[in-house]
Length: 233
Image (spheres, rainbow, N blue to C red):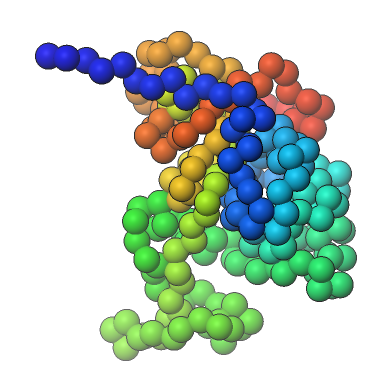
């Protein structure tokens, strides 16, 4: 029996983010602050690709995360469940400087999940007769009306994990599991920032929340900037 070594996917943050070019679609993990990959977003701002489609559950708050990208003029379209905590996002939307696609939170999560599962979409009755229905195809299942919700994929997913090994097996802390694993599975390329990279075998199988098969690059964070301290674990 021949055992092949697992590839080492560790990368510098600059090299990992350099793959993202103008016009890319980028999923950003996180549920508010928990799980948001702030260091990867900072590097994305520094490198400056333009006309991005950003997919995130929320638009973060002023002076953090998504707001950095908006203030830097890098976002052409934002796909999200709400922007109410970000005055920059509201202003740019009202000025028609960016396009905003609102998606109910559960529908957003499911559209991403089915993409990762290799499906084309699903049918839901959520939003019938409301603005959510606009532009969507009505279908009938067993005589009941529903809306066809298409799978949501992206070129890249940027993910924050509590722990990773060099292959990219990931452990998430608390609420950080809400969108990060789904997005990692729905993107063509997944880049992870990890608070710690641990030796192979350190993560017990039951603590691997996402297989490294879905990960392309792992960046270890030497320290967490102050923005991560908003939530005390």
